[in-house]
Image (cartoon, rainbow, N blue to C red):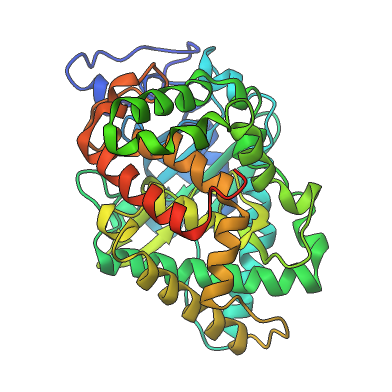
Length: 423
């Protein structure tokens, strides 16, 4: 880990970290002009309610590893300061918009990701936790946000979870205890939101932007090239050739059907669907774990959508192959039980889906799962093997034997369930 004090007044200062720089996002190796002692002094004065507060030392470092996130720039700030009560120190995470030009900036410049996340931390999540507390549940859904702003810059500052013992899983798959803990918390979140969508729908008025609505996202080459690469793979593997015709029929519309599934609640709500507040990006790097307990992070893509969508995203971007395969039904049942129990505890009139209804909802949102299988799962498998840059051409990852084995398993399951009836 690197650190620097007395933040320079130039807009950027490249740090000399030739050996370590590949571990971090490039735009987090550069000091921003306004990240200085004066800036953090004002934040801490307000947070501590201590107008006499003086910062004695400020050290910044990247807050995350290469590939942990793509929509923001994040720094860890270790601050030593003095108040009338004595000397203190605090580790903070600062999250802001990218200022350097490039793909990341183009993707998020005109997005609503910070508006969404600020609304989540200041309006939605406090209400969710208040409902849990009212029924004796002490579950914490998020780490406190100690500062936020939209002007003159979009910024959020949080307590750092790492000194509290939480870690992001990077060098292994999550174990079954960790997955169950995350699903239990997600089920509680979903249950409360289902009740609130009925009772206070205005609470979610501003939460209408999902992954597919990021500027220019649907035109990104890693999306548009995925299905052709997948079809080519099907043609090359004898046992998969029989499925090729189904995916040929999806050329030209799979991406849009996936986007339609994410935005269904706002644009085309279905009578028998179950809608909840989706986290929207429930992958392994957006969870932090401590002794099999977990904390959710990154709510920039939270939106109201079909209940199954978060589970599907978790299945392909958080679960390991066994959990996607032989343990899938067991995990669905575990999630649904917590969902139903929470609805009962909080006095919801509306019930949750049965197991069979949940499976039916999966088929109703089949294009979401097909998009995850063809486009996102190969990225997830390759990134765990440190094999790819996710934004570059990735034909080789479709040749991965582990990926091909999973594809065969899931396509057989999907065919039996009727995913390809009528395509």
